[in-house]
Amino acid sequence: MLSHNENEAEAAGGHEHPAWQAHHFYSGAQQKASVKLGMWAFLVQEVLFFSGLFMAYFAFRYLYPDTWLAAHELLDWRLGGLNTVVLLFSSLTMALAVRACQLDDMKAVVRYLWITIGCAGIFMVVKYFEYSHKFHAGTLPGKWYTFDGIEGGAPEVFFAVYFMMTGVHGLHVVIGIGIMLWMIFGPIRKGKISKDYYPLVENVGLYWHLVDLIWIFLFPLLYLVR
Amino acid sequence: MSASAHAHEEHGEHISSLKSYLVIFGILLVLTVVTVGVSRLGLPSDISIMVAIGVACVKAFFVAGWFMHLKWDTRFNLLVFLGGFWFMLVFFGFTLTDLGSRGNLIEANDNFSQRADMGAKYAEPAHHVEGSGGHH
Image (cartoon, rainbow over all chains, first blue to last red; front, side, top):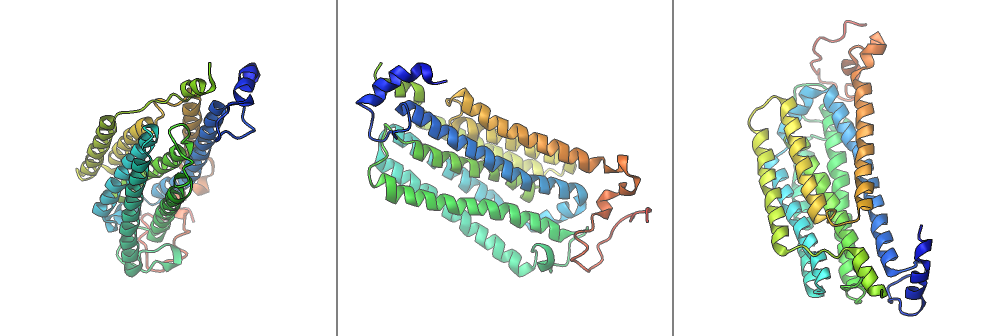
């Protein structure tokens, strides 16, 4: 498919290819496109693996509709709503970090990344309070469920689904924090990111927006199911 | 054509304005308020969940289109991403159809939902199982 580009690529790759270009790419443009495509393929995998959890939610909701309606009353929609706003805002700052790359303002990139990390931290702190409340109340998955006061069968299944979905999502938030910290202290500090080459920041951004995207569906389904 | 000019063109380099990002963020906040508001109207739960999922899809559209820059990305990347959602819908469609039609094939599975006693195994307190199956 690329063969008709070969001459041109040879010309580009021959002498004046940029430092960031890996030798197994014909051209910088091809490298950028490939790196991006790889990320989208990874995101598709993320969507499909989360879809298994969403399917579990829908299947058990279908089997135990009354339980689902009763159990969600035990989740605090205000905390869920707060976390929604926090994540949306962090998505905004992440998008602005990528924009700052385009404008070649690396100071602003780092600043926006720190704000994004801060929001992710707030998200996890709220999550911690929600989880510890449930540990005290005994609204836990499976055999650890000790709460008494939900009408309908199998409330422990609702909480299995709840903890699995929010837990795996929370894990993604924590991993996101780690990647952003690494990016700030690694490639950005070493000056490897610039206006000319920033797919790393773009891809971390895409990952972060997907984490936000999943929460956009988790919030109404878990906290507002009515 | 020089390599850098080529890369430039290929990459699409659309730089959205600060204002456009803020507008999208504003839209997302409003939609969050809408989805909370609708859930508190006391609509029948079937309708309520349809609205909730619908609003979430609109939010996802704005996040994917503007924050994830799909609006300016190559059509191929868009196809890849939407393809993922297509397969998700196939997965949901077949699984829900199966779940909802068990009784049509095997009569013993008629009240499959009541038979799903995976939960009862754990919790001793009597769950009230209404109309518990006339089938055994």
